[in-house]
Image (cartoon, rainbow, N blue to C red; front, side, top):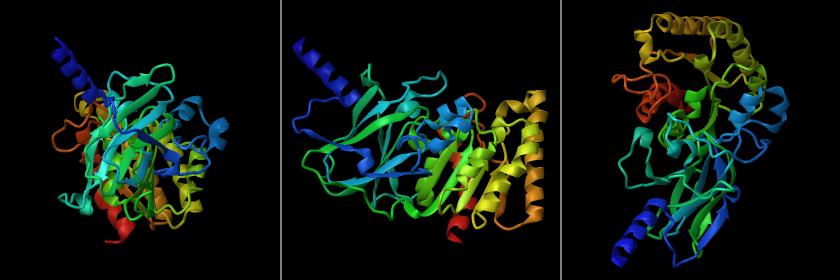
Length: 375
């Protein structure tokens, strides 16, 4: 019986990452490392997504959504033989249609020079996504180990934060005697920058883990920062958000993807003004406008079979007006192919699975890459 209990304890330790450690951990505040995919330094915390001054100018629901840490990641390099994490959640939320690992988990990638290169030479390899079990329920503390028995050589890492919850504080855990640095600037280079604005889909609903959010895939494969400004239910073309976006320095490309949250009237009346703010304030930046997806069920629902294309029609009308005024630096992506050939890319007919996000990234990659690198 004692052997059985010891075996069960070992399995539990493996599953949760709470194994007793003979060597002490060093807890490194993530703010002392390189936090990427953030638009502003003036946010209310390092892990929120809009500047603090907007709080009184936007709807309460929009402000709550921006407190989710979607798309934000931490870059570092270490020679530690193991890597772990500890963080405090803002909400400890739960949704019935999205895995907790994506909603409030954290996701580790490693740069592997020996790996077979993916798109555009990408060699970021997934290591592990923690299960966000609360070690301290009262304070909403998650703590776990991503990986053990590493080589002890200096290696490059990236940790993605929760998609649909916020982070109050965060620490990267390494061996107490290990070296840890910000990592190479050549990986996820700050020399290029994409800002993506949109809805719950863009925010990451319903990726199984944070690294599979569409903006995260694009960031790895474009080797640049992609700032995620997806706000669930709140991507409604607010002009104050456009004005704030226009203050982000050195943006190469804006991706505008709000149609799922907009009525056809909003697509008609708000699109021009939102994009025009960006064009007038950031004349050298490229703007890519993305149609709303045609949800799978719309083939069989006569109302949505008409309504979803109608929204795209008005969205495109405004694109054509903008392009007629100035054809430079403005591009359009249709809904065709956004859901991929299998038609199995959604969880609930709307929000994307990992497969759906892979198709989304595949659709945008050939548009964004030449805009960033001129090839």
